[in-house]
Length: 242
Image (cartoon, rainbow, N blue to C red; front, side):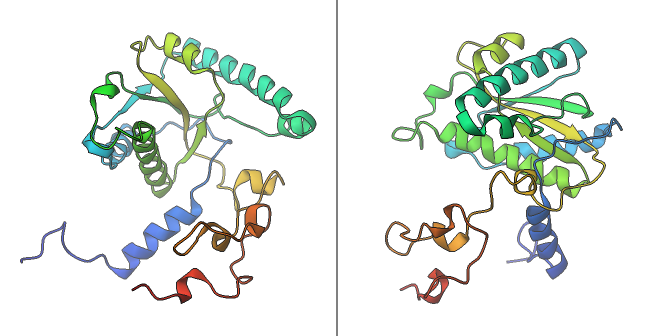
């Protein structure tokens, strides 16, 4: 078989770049007002649209928010849910309120991501797991996120809102469902660590505690501990696959 751009192996530098982008992606909340080039936006949305989807259903829909009034309404919706979340968190509510949960006032671009209407007709891969439409759309968001980081842009996924209110604000069809507000733009600097880790809200779970071999993982020590894989007596990668 002759080599084509779609069959050739990736160079070592290309492989390293992929892993670097994954490791350095951050959920950003601090932005500058520097505009994002239109050609870059086109590349980012094209990357999102190349995401895998169950049954090739491609359930994602994107709305670019250009109206300042609608952006202000989004911020109000997020703030209302932020207050409700703080109340639901009880004793952690005050700590939560000190966190910055969105960058709608600063970012150059805002996108709404929604699940398309008519998803119920897609049975392939969804008969027993209808949530695969959401999983597919999340893949598109991750594609966009990684592409943005590769372009030197930050992105933040905001999920604090009442879906019905956002659907009404943007005249979505009855069966459509908004799942994300994406803040996108240039940033002063990328965080060294995930922002919630830097703020002491949570730590990354140890990978070994999340992986089982032929059964459910039994080591739960990493659920609130540091990211370490040195504690297990025998790691999952030491067991040969037959």
